[in-house]
Image (cartoon, rainbow, N blue to C red; front, side, top):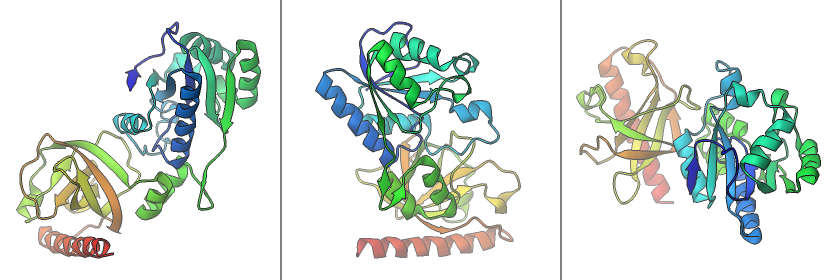
Length: 311
């Protein structure tokens, strides 16, 4: 998959295109991308995806923007698995936000990407003031001679699938429900970096996974599996949050204790798959109380894995 950090002024090849933020790449996104790649193959053109960085809501209302489900790197990895040929990561700035809907179509879609067929979600809006919609694109498709279709919202087991729905299930702690909407366990990927070694002092060494996001869609203590360390995913216990026992106003961290595994993995790029939430974060009287609770958590997580492995 080819990734471009801007839209060219003039396209070199025509494309079958979709547009969106694709945060989380849930089942609805996956269905749209399956339609995109199948259509591209039938036409004989590359499939292309246009996305924005930062998310438009992060640009307009940074303090009110929802927590991201995926970092840009995670999103690109998931898109690649869907077989998309090209991704254009368009910087969302004042210049882009000021484009009218008509200018967006002529400069970005027609001139920059030479769209021959466009597939969008049925709620897609674009252009200054979000004035552009599917009806406007239908009219533009006749003028500029490209095909267009809207992908209806996907329902899974009677529930509308959306990034907002995934966030709500993660925030509520229903990790298994989120996995059903995503079609896979929710995960966070990052590099293992040096921490403060408190876990090792307490008898439960942890891998500190670097977080590159301002807000998190979930927090607490979890049963997880970790890939990127061994040939198969390893079971573990994870703490994601601000560690209230250690202080106030600390930055969120992701710490993972791998069960029956104790060798340094600094520098490894790992993926932490969240399987089950055990409890919320809590503040304890001191490190001894925290150590006792961690021991109970690890024991409970071992029981969880024992039950899931035995059916």
